[in-house]
Image (cartoon, rainbow, N blue to C red; front, side, top):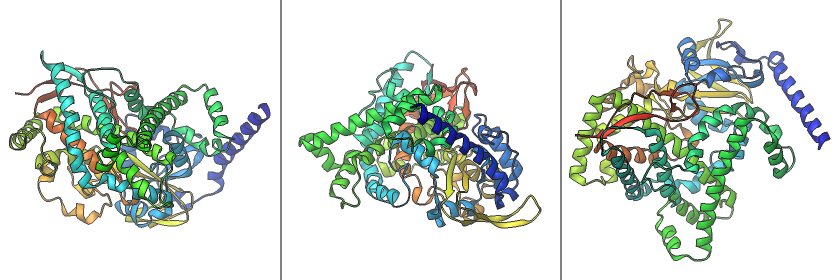
Length: 541
């Protein structure tokens, strides 16, 4: 054991030394791209990039524009961009020349398993092919009653909280519990939370803590490719248990909770199918939830397309990770903005109440999707405040990154494209693209839902932003675009309709800030990593 640990230590030191020296020995075209100075020999600009106050990345956008150079871990240079042509190349035109990088894919595989989030190339296409039927519009229509049922329970629970008068509620917690229940019932046919009162839920707490904790352990990605080679999983787990680093142990505990609960749900459903449980067989046949659809599609798939149990199980953890925080935080952001713009909240309440008067509390899917002001509020929020902030890709081979506008290099030369060497990392800044004044106009930084009620500027169409949603990069683009964006939109609209028709939301005296992270989240202050957001809630007149 001592000899093994010694060898591991020596290899780690040699890797560290080479990574520190190689950027200064092996110069590339990226070194001619303007950008901020490195702040650390080990982490470069990454500590600044993931600072919760967002000042560094905002300053980078304002100072250097659509393309700049950043310093990553151990001296690596990376490209930071929100140039539409560059984004189209990375995510659509030349997407096969990029993947998420060995570090990120292995890290995702260790945390959530070999699901669609950690897959690339043929493996990703095989998984996505089986998942696509579960995210069709036809299936979204079928999920609407489930969503209204869950949102109705939320509405009843909040009514009980505020029936005695206005009350400060942790809206983020309620939105998180609701999103988890929507994912549980809509994707897995499983109820995580009855939403009847403010109760402690270990699983919900783990999901809510995932993003803040993951941000604290970003530096670990550097060592993951080496760690996965250290013997069998049991030995690696032993080494992990021995690490006296609190953030890593928290991340391990969160991953364990998510995995064990997903395993319980999957085993229950699979066992019921195998023993011929009539209710489960009917649910699978009628496609009441996405896991049922996935199991059904997997059973009839060709052998070469069929997913293993590990891959199916990993999809569940992926659904929870990707589908809960993003939607709950987006809903919380909408409610925060409606508190700041009471005129918009009043106008939206009039629209949803009129729709409820016409259709009842369960507004049909197509009619709900067509509510113009509700749609405008959701689009504008997702434009200005995309839940996910960055997307990382790494070149699998030498390629070229085209630019919409020429870039002046450090040496004064103009570049209309950037040669990309194999291994180069490209960081796509999603909010910066959505807020680009050259595309959206001088009011791009203002929250104005009305912009969606009239023709968009011609510059939006001319920019050819490659995103799959509303000329935005919010849900990414190409073959790795968010497969669940229609699911998320339905969640948001159903919840907003039922809440706004009944309640008025106002800012509380309890302050909060929005933290910049892989997925933005609110907390009481930048010094606090506990996700929370209190708003004053009362019955609407």
